Image (cartoon, rainbow, N blue to C red):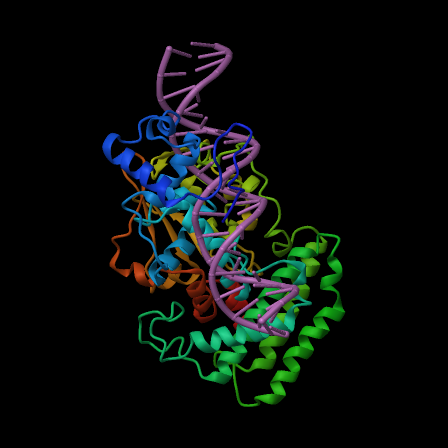
Amino acid sequence: MMGRSASSEENGLKKGPWTPEEDQKLVDYIRRNGHGSWRALPKLAGLNRCGKSCRLRWTNYLRPDIKRGKFTEDEEKLIINLHAVLGNKWSTIAGHLPGRTDNEIKNFWNTHLKKKLLQMGIDPVTHRPRTDLNILSDLPHLLAAAANLATSFFDNSNTNNPLISSDTSNHLRLHYSDTAQLAKFQVLHNILQVLGSTTTSSSAANANPANLDAIYNLLGSSSSSSSSSTIFNMDRQPCVDEYLRFIEHSRLDNAFGHGPVGAVFGPHNPTSTTHHHVQSSTNFPTSHHHQLAPHLVDHHHVLSINHPISTTCNSSKIISDGPPAVLNNPLFCNNNNNNNNNQLPPLVSVALSPDGHLETTTSSSLMSNRISNQNYKVNPNNNINLDLSNPNSSTTSTTFEAWGDLLDDETTDSYWKHIME
DNA sequence: AAGTACAACAACCGCCTTATG
DNA sequence: ACATAAGGCGGTTGTTGTACT
């Protein structure tokens, strides 16, 4: 038995898992008559269930067009991409995966994808590097996980790996020693996020010099173990020094209230009134549900989105009553063209192109266009249409790729310029 | 072999929106 | 304009299956 007790409830209606006999009754009835009114259905079909239970059983399990079985890699990537844009809008996400139900996708996310992202040091809610305060205490584990992941992802033999784009330019074909450095840098990147994001909180202790020393030591010890390796063709030590100076700089900036890093993950400060179901209220999830990944917003393009648009997405009415609060928050913005040299780059950006396309892009593809992107096309009827026909969709930028590109891209963000140069 | 911990997932619950009178 | 019913959505629960000790 699964789920709830199968015993009769006080109203006399059965709950809990469905028996094959019940399934048969439901299927037979709907085949003959359609479901009609769900409330009336159970009686007519001879089922001792509430209509809601019948509807759920039909839509999530018995419907003939349901695809069962393991999620494919493409489906997995698509879910991650859609989640980065839509948040926990499971039904909307399900609308883009034929044959999959929202419930199935939700379960898959909670049991598989969430963990996968966490293991990579990526916050599954924001799709940004993890910022939880345990990250420092979890450093050894994270480092090991990152190294393992990076090693496997950058294995040349793994051609299906989402971190490796289809291009053959050897951008990402790093040697093992470099891979290890890459992994460390990824961890450091996370640490930086933590340091920056906690300096305005009561946990500012995380940014104390002792922690910086610890980080420095971490890298220092590594430098002696692989003396010849370099990071992206640069001497490591100056780079590390620069990185740590950057941390300090960010920290000090924040202390005086004008540093960008510390507030990157701050409140979204929504301007809209309370919306319990954001799908009918704004064209972006609100901070109330923590569904908008702040990094989705690209400051460079945000201004052009600053007009009311009414859109529908997968038949759910979405009305914008002005730009989401985060769009007005420079702290969530890319730094392509601003003076926040210290701000970390967003992994994915949302942009409205001149011809009215709402696009999501990775930090690197903003510049290099090397990786294709999901396109949300706003058609004349103001319907957002996720273009899945894109032949490059199998190489669509994901958080994984974004990380790879993030470390690979030498031109996208002045932040990385600042560090690397 | 038995016990324990965890993963998986169907099903439920409560809340919200939409439809209808 | 309002009340209520119905449908839909997202979060959560609780049992089963499996891996591990």
